[in-house]
Amino acid sequence: AQTVTQSQPEMSVQEAETVTLSCTYDTSESDYYLFWYKQPPSRQMILVIRQEAYKQQNATENRFSVNFQKAAKSFSLKISDSQLGDAAMYFCAYLRSGTYKYIFGTGTRLKVLA
Amino acid sequence: KAGVTQTPRYLIKTRGQQVTLSCSPISGHRSVSWYQQTPGQGLQFLFEYFSETQRNKGNFPGRFSGRQFSNSRSEMNVSTLELGDSALYLCASSLPGQSSYNEQFFGPGTRLTVL
Image (cartoon, rainbow over all chains, first blue to last red; front, side, top):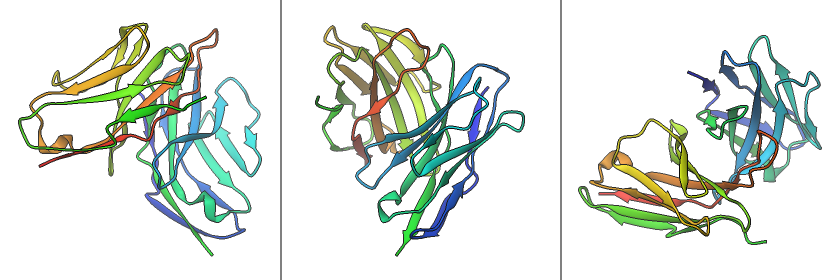
């Protein structure tokens, strides 16, 4: 069975600094997608970034980028120039291609210090 | 376009009762998924519906059930509530297309408290 592990329950970062959130996953599949979702205190989850497993190039969305290491089954999220609005729960998620069953990690709470 | 809406937003029930939660997807979205979110457990997949058919199911007891209507609105029902069912229940909709990946859009959730 596929699993997603986020080993950092909580992280803190100073405003304008860079922080990296860790995620590892376990799967025997070769075709899948990985995601980072953000859940601000208002609770509406939004997609931050996604990565297709077949793509070697790491995905980037403005200040957000990932370090995808397929062989190591690692998928970390880097947030550059952290802003107060980045404070939220961040969830890493896995989706096997052709299915609709997302598997989420337990989340990392990010605090941004002014 | 209006986002995913869930009603009610908050609910308090007692053990043994049953509850029905509702989810209205984004207009045009035909896939609706449900998740249970608890502290320390993250989000756990309950089930997914498409065109009124349950396509995927998570590892939850039979007390958890759902359905989808012809207008894609979905309901989930929990019978014989237990204290451990207290959680935030999230609904997500997506627009199935050619690709095997379809972005999920989440609702604000229903906070269920079982006393």
